[in-house]
Amino acid sequence: MKKNWIKYIISFVSVMAIRLMPFRAPNVEPIMAVIMPFGKVYGGFMSFVFGFLSIVLYDSVTSGLGIWTLVTALAYGLIGLGTQLYFKKRSGWKNYAAYAAIATIFYDAITGLTIGPLFFHQLFMVSLIGQIPFTALHLLGNVSFAIVLSPVIEKWFMKSEIKVLSVRKMSLVS
Image (cartoon, rainbow, N blue to C red; front, side, top):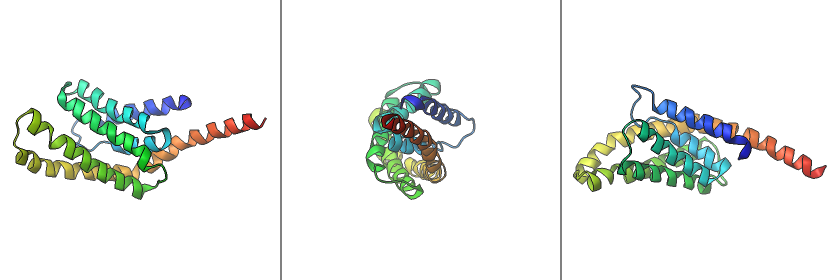
């Protein structure tokens, strides 16, 4: 990972820039598309950190920090941890799409159906009904980005890993 902090920072800044774009549809953002290949290549911990910090820093710049930040950041962090296990022996756009769909439903259920009722005394049915179009848009964005971006990001991350491994093998042989 030492050689790839630049890619981590480029990925993080790119995700934040897209999330900060004005007039962007809510929940159409590439966090999921980045944490999946990141977890596959660099492990669950770094993917957890990426998802967690993406939420915390975005909230600190936009809406401010609150209990919603903790819940949503932990949820994205857990999704990041899961990527290491799920993608250990999997790859390809179909697997990225499947994980994105399952993880999005998990994330929206945890965040959308708990924060309003538990912390803001919103009725559960109001949260559930309001969550349906929100989750549909979130699924559309995450699955689309997973199909298009995640395989490309994985190749980009793997490119330097292959070079690093080649250099290490050559120095061991010499």
